[in-house]
Image 1 (cartoon, rainbow, N blue to C red):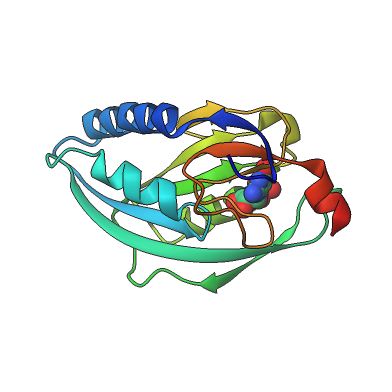
Image 2: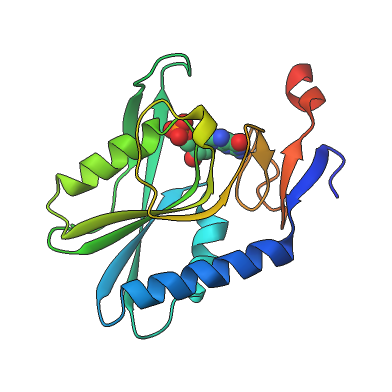
Length: 182
Ligand code: 5GP
């Protein structure tokens, strides 16, 4: 375990098992359909690649990526979200499944889901590896959830602190001393 991690919340094996279940559920729901998986950079990238490979070949899957930056402090209910890197292709008339690492205050996803719907997508759904409902400030419907987590700052499996820890194969709670020192 990394020295900055206090506790492992979900091991590599637990994540693998849950992602396989999510893939099976998504495969059933989209059987015979085409869907654009929209990965939210950068945190969702590890989850995205595992999830994509857990979706059966009876679903016609394509990939696209978007990057958002959230401004405003966490005590404000609606932050300003800016798109830093937009999708490569239009989603009009397509089923879209947004793939996110974690839904926290909901600010980013509330904006993003509304934005994608306004582009005329046939449907827009959300799959999040982690959900922190205690922290929600803006409502977000999460269609598929990996795990519901308490209000800890977690890292690993794509999630960072100051761009570090993304490569850890598990989800762990970051020691408070790491961000207190910063
Ligand atoms: P929201 O807009 O829902 O408040 O924020 C979502 C984003 O905040 C996530 O995509 C993620 O980048 C970041 N975030 C929220 N909670 C955590 C956490 O516990 N750990 C890490 N590493 N990032 C988090």
